[in-house]
Image 1 (cartoon, one colour):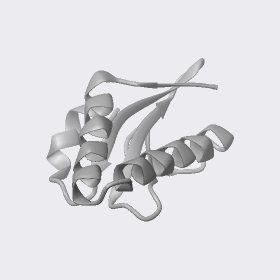
Image 2 (image 1 turned 180 degrees about the horizontal axis):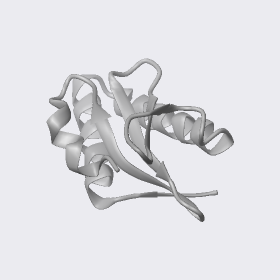
Image 3 (image 1 turned 120 degrees about the vertical axis):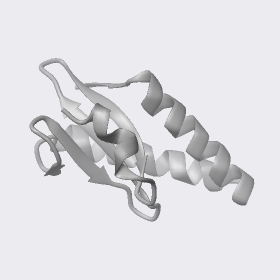
Image 4 (image 1 turned 120 degrees about the horizontal axis):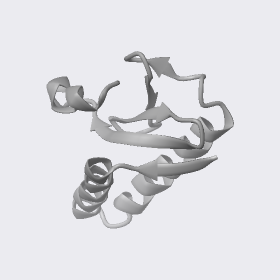
Length: 97
């Protein structure tokens, strides 16, 4: 199944990679690898993760305080947020369906 990031989610991913790379060279790449692994888990079992809205689900990353918020659509998985778990949840509220 195809996976697509909406623009704000893509920006959040890039921002987090830059942040972690600034903290420790190579850590941004490890974060990106974990996002990729989470996407693989979602693709394998898209309905397995916790529902946080009517259509939106949350897959928590391993080793990082982030989660992918996503919606399963007929032909794709739509990543709506790369959500920092320490960030105010109101920031993502308008992206939860």
